[in-house]
Length: 283
Picture 1 (cartoon, helix red, strand yellow):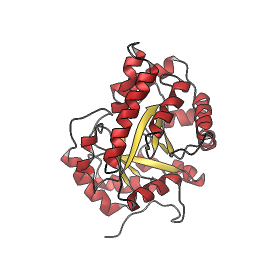
Picture 2: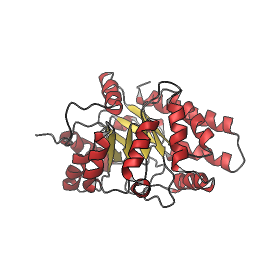
Picture 3: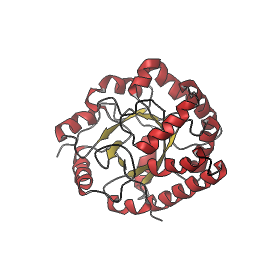
Picture 4: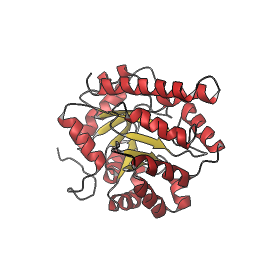
């Protein structure tokens, strides 16, 4: 069967593509934690980035808080609300990330950002600032994947990746269109609905992963509902990586309620990240 590829130069490589290629050659899956920018504050965010990076995570997804997220469940929505209550701004996020990236070698960092937020600031301005800050790619959940061709070209022109989301319920003909404007990896949503922790991996996801293997050479990373090391094994051999968001962000709730200190939260998140890295790397 002829494979379908994104409509970009085959020779173009990125830090995200290189990371997945290296992991694949070593027989390992990628682990990618999600964190919210600005929760508890920008200084705390850089400490959280340090905490997960120190555990050997392979990539990091950083959410840009938005008042009307369409794909996020209650845990991440609450985290976004906490950040926005502190009057967090987009330039503050870029400034904090740029400082963090300048301090040493870092895993590739992806922005999970609403297209409405990008458009409001000016799409090209946003992309230029993100590149200058050291972001390696973007996940834009409110831009339909089969309508993303223009943004895809702008992102790729800057040597960065635009990751697209597909769900088990996405019609296959539409997935094939989505893949044309996707690079870095395909974000495979484990279940229909919003982000959040689930008990197990569903058969519908496994079937879609098998089908996607025939449609694209892009790595497949699974998120939404993945939270524990035991979720990794059913995906081994089908997915190239897993993403954990709510399962990590929920550790910030006791801090927000005044029931924990930041060092305690950093320890909890570091420990959780370490368990996921071990599971993904075959430990």
